[in-house]
Image 1 (tube, rainbow, N blue to C red):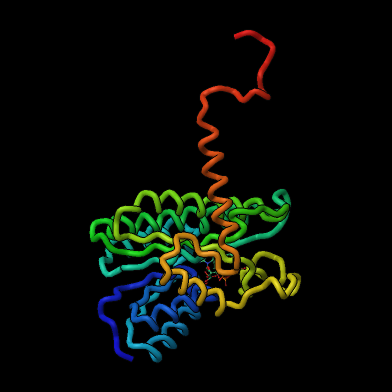
Image 2: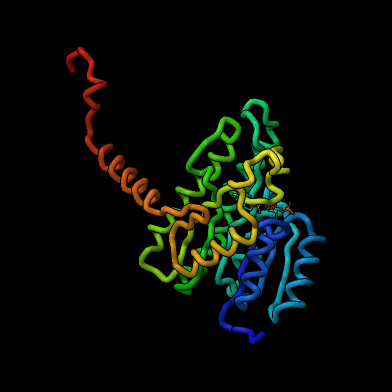
Length: 269
Ligand code: NAP
């Protein structure tokens, strides 16, 4: 394959399995050099070897626990000093699906640390460089559960809602630049995260579960289409447009400076 030397380096967090591993392959196919990040080094090494054998790209990997302050700091240093980076997919994520009060505190914290803190810190590691060079793509993987909450997903949904709003804010901040910021909202996809979260994939209605290939390829297409919010499984995108319209109307409706009539009290002010 002819290498496109202008693609630069794509960083994929959570590249040791699931969506991240396939994002890495798809990006290599497009000519990106890669920097892969996850805790399971053997898997990263196997993937790196496979990709190097298949595509004419350079593949580096960093074994790091993004939930550890020390590891995160060294990844931040690495990324912020690398001017070759043109794309970051904040894909690493973890989930524990259980009632809040039955979720061990270390699992509660892991979701905040990986899904929120690391995602924010790594965005901050690349965005100043993207801004200076007026070039770069940030892809934040949220979830449909960033919009909907189940009794067992209060923390996971909360973390993904952070990704939704954080990414929306960045999109406004970078709107007049050549820095592209994308929000991705996968629905159930057949990856290891379900086992990690304590809900076997077999517990889901198979008709609602997407394959990794379909999800990643839909996202790649959504990036090509320059969609700011990529909903891989949603056929009728007008539903999202209506949702956004209602959200903005509600926002405008908050700007009255006085209590709504239903909160009127009989006490004269
Ligand atoms: P997955 O196969 O479990 O992959 C998760 C990846 O995140 C793994 O590579 C894992 O690597 C990495 N990761 C987890 N904790 C980490 C930590 N502390 N430090 C570094 N890396 C860590 O699941 P997936 O479905 O592909 O998940 C990818 C993204 O999609 C996640 O953000 C997830 O929330 C989101 N998502 C998934 C679904 C779904 O149904 N699958 C739906 C909506 C959104 P190591 O374990 O090797 O560290």
